Image (cartoon, rainbow, N blue to C red):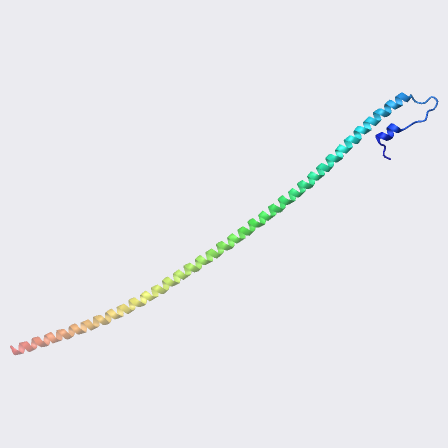
Amino acid sequence: MNITPLDIKQRQFRLKFRGFDIREVDSFLEEVTASIEDMVRENAALREDKASLESQLVTYKDAEKALRDTLLAAQKMAEDMKATSERDASLRLKEAELGAEKILMDAKNQLTRLEEEITELKRLKQRFTLKVRGVIDDHLKMLDYEEREEGTQG
């Protein structure tokens, strides 16, 4: 049963012979009424405070959830960026290795071509030398022949 301050004010008691002092009872009831009125006001204020705090708590929990979600998203983004960077670095390293291998192969091929050209040039030089010697030998033989012919004629 809820007793309100109004219930206390309006409460009537029967009079009996040799009962309580009416003024004293009325005074006490006034004090009780005032005290209960204060408690009702305080209770209402506390309920309002409680509702406000509960509302703030919901707001803070929402903010906390949003921050947690943002943090998780940032962590995931950082992990994704790291993975992407690692993939990019690995890809660039492989591209560099392939480029280096190609350059090395090209250099080896060029070296092989140059060695073949050198060999061919040596062969040509040798043939040219042999031809020149042959021509020189032929000319020497002709000179010898002419000197012998002049020596027999003169």
